[in-house]
Amino acid sequence: MPGGTNDWFWRGRFAIVQTKRTLIRATLEDGLKPAAFAYAKARSLEDAVAQLAAHEGEAKLLAGGQSLIATLNMRLSSPSLLIDINDIGLDGISVKNGVVEIGALTRHVTLERSADIAKHAPLIALAMPHIAHPAIRNRGTIGGSLAYADPAAELPACLVALDGEIDIAGPSGKRTVKAADFFKGLFETALGPHDVLGEVRFPAATADARVGFAELARRHGDYAMVGLAAVAKANGKGLSDVRLVYFGVGATPVRARKAEAALAAGSVEDAVKTLDLEPTSDLHATGEVKKHLAGVLLRRVAEQLAEPRA
Ligand code: FAD
Image (cartoon, rainbow, N blue to C red; front, side, top):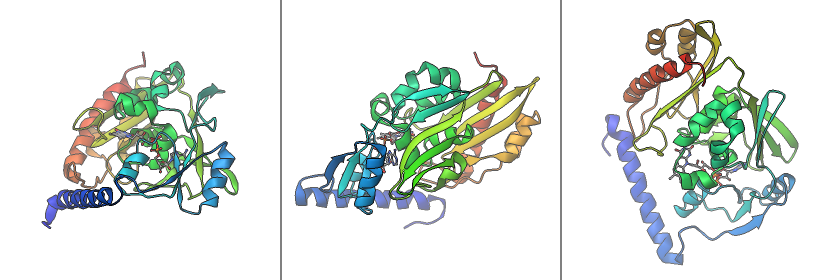
C-alpha cells in the first residue's frame, strides 16, 4: 500500500473493497444484507435499560435508524437484538427558567422547524439544514446523533459550544455528563453498554447572545470536511465568552481556546494566526488543508458573531 500523505486514501479504498466483498459473500449466503436479528419494542426508558442489561452486549438501541441500519447493512455491526426506543416518550422540546431541554428521540426535522429552537437555540437552528438531507432529517434523532458521535457531525459540536449537558439512564440509575466530557474518542462516548441517552440541556440564548455556524462539505448534506460552531456574548463593540468548537478535525469536537482568546481581544487575523488545531488527515483532505479551511471558516464565523441577531 502506498505511504505518505495518500496513505489514508489508500487505506480507505482498501477498506471499502473489503467491505463490499464481505457484503456480497454474506448476501449470497443468506440473501439478506444485514445479519439476522430479533426486534423488541421498549415500553419506557427503564425498560430499555433493563432489556440492554438482559442481553449483555448482544443488543443495540434503534432510534431513527439512519446510521445504525447502514452499519447493519454493511455488516459492520451484527447485534442479535434491536431494541426500538421510538415509543418511550422521550421526544419534545421545552424551554423553562432559561434552560432548553430536548428529549433524545426528538427528530432533526422537529428541531429544524421549531419556533422555540429558532428563538432560544439559534446555533442549533443554523446547524440543522447542514445535517444530511430532508429524508434523513425526517427520521434521525438528536440522541442518535450524539450517541453515534461521528467526528464530522454537527450536533455534538453545537452541544459543546453551548456548554450543554446530557442525561444518561443506566442500570445504577441516572447521571448527568457535561457535553465536553461526553465525547471520549472516535465514535466513543461516556455511554456504557447498558446506558440510554435521555435528554440534553443547555442555557437558552440571552439577548446579548451571538452565534455563528459554517462548514465545508463536498456536496450540501454530506458530512463536513471541516465545520465550526461558535457562540459568544456581545460586549460593547466587541465579544466576550467566545467558544469556538470545530468538527471534522479530530476524533471528537475540538475547542480552539487560543483563537477564542484572540477573538475576544478583538482581532480576527490574530485568531486565525493563533488557531490552535492539529487536524488529522482523512479520506477528504490532509491535516494541512483542513487547517487552512479551519481558518477560512473562522473568518466567516467571526463575521456572523459581529452581527446582532435579527
Ligand atoms: P440510529 O441510527 O438509530 O442509532 C445510531 C447509534 O446510536 C446506534 O448505535 C444506536 O444504538 C445509538 N443510539 C441511538 N439513540 C440512542 C439513545 N437514546 N441512547 C443511547 N444510544 C442510542 N449526521 C450528521 O450529523 N451530519 C450529516 O451531514 C449527516 N449526513 C448523513 C448522510 C447520510 C446519507 C446518512 C444515512 C446519515 C447522515 N447523518 C448525518 C446521520 C444522521 O444524522 C443520523 O440520523 C444520526 O447520526 C443518528 O441518529 P439516528 O436517530 O438515526 O440513530
